[in-house]
Length: 261
Figure (cartoon, one colour):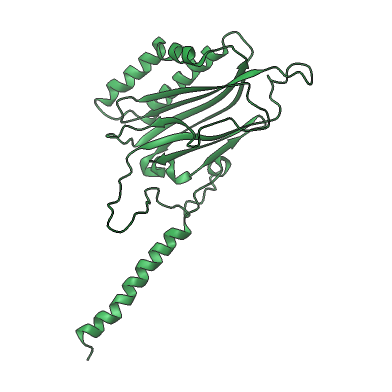
């Protein structure tokens, strides 16, 4: 007859083994970087996802809760030749400005539309835009109201040098009646229920189209790339499951990511 102590001795190794297997499995599923094409083509390996909330901590130190969702453009590479910059005679490329525009709409915060413009004066061709080490942050959620849905637009557009001053351009957008109207509608809807995905997408498009129209004016400009999409908490953990997303064309390549910080 097996003693109670003997039975416990036989059970504990199984418990330890199960716990070890779970930890080991999480370590093996740590690859979270996938291309935009891989996601779009439906070939994203959803069975290789590491929970985004993982955080290491020292024994006895309380685990700090992740509170903010953040979308940041991590990298922008410019092709050696672009349409506008090389419109002049060979060897005499036209100097240009490049504008990075981000529009992110969420369904919870008091500021439902976050809009950012960054400018780069005559950036080097065949290289990277000088972004901060943390990337160009285009959105950060309300600390007290984590969203369950995000809709985003990322635009890279090239203009003749000195065509716009970025602060003036930003003020023209946020003071426009269309921008104020969209923001007001989302804010009012949110007092009753979270805005729907379709309403958020329309709001993002209105703000992006308004910004594009103001940037273009009557001058010749080149839209280098435009990325758009949406993330949902239940479907993809607000996009954090995808890791670094890359999108490219012959003119440029951008990499962006949603993180919990």
